[in-house]
Image 1 (cartoon, rainbow, N blue to C red):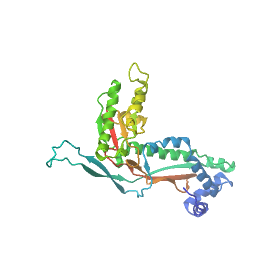
Image 2: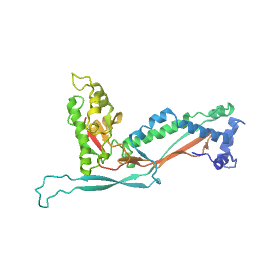
Image 3: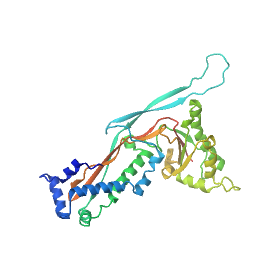
Image 4: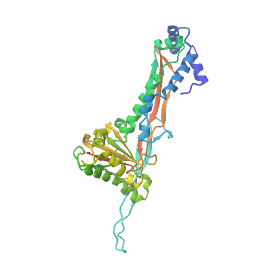
Length: 336
């Protein structure tokens, strides 16, 4: 948040209401060194420092896995209606005359993304303010960092699995993607069977691109269950090879050989994300043209408030879940 002159002035006003009495109580407990304007500035500095905390950066992994849209204007309690497309139809042999020509068509659908408010807060105790004020040292940024971390963890969950109770779906459990069944359990399957399973799932997206003539929508990311990822990274293609199955797939999958720069990562959530709690792989186009996480408002902290003999700093934000723009932008491979 931005601490304007008006906000800082408001924080230093001593009136007859309950909040002013609480502030006076805090001042009495902390001592003459307490200054509300200085405290507000200290909190602002702590929040700014928290933004570079390494734990917060690590929790923002979802912003790398899913493009984020923060430009959509929305109000809590409303819904954002977004569309998605699906191309259907396939050509077939023709005699050269007659009207039995197959028709290609594009189907359109809508997704209603409910706008939800989230909140998180942190506070400083009298003892912490005493140490900061009398020792002339900055307030620790750990609490602001913890609040930011809590927000990022929440958004990671929304991006990955949504919030079913709010009608929101995530990347790993959406009802739009096509589900392809693996032919065998990868724990015991041959390397060729595993490679074929991936090729079959990727092929669904290739069918879409061949129909529309748009290769820009091909998948560029493969997320594997962490248990299967470890398996593929330790098993070799065959007993006479030192190349792991994972290394082979990185170099020889259907996408890579067609010039697509493919990212392959692991997620523990995928170990039980498939139908019937089976392992699931997610193959998708990690691009804003294909899917976006809608976050209308980033975490914003409001003015510090007196609460009993503590200073309480609440924060709020808005989110609306994952928007998948094309039916073939995401493909699931289940039962690995």
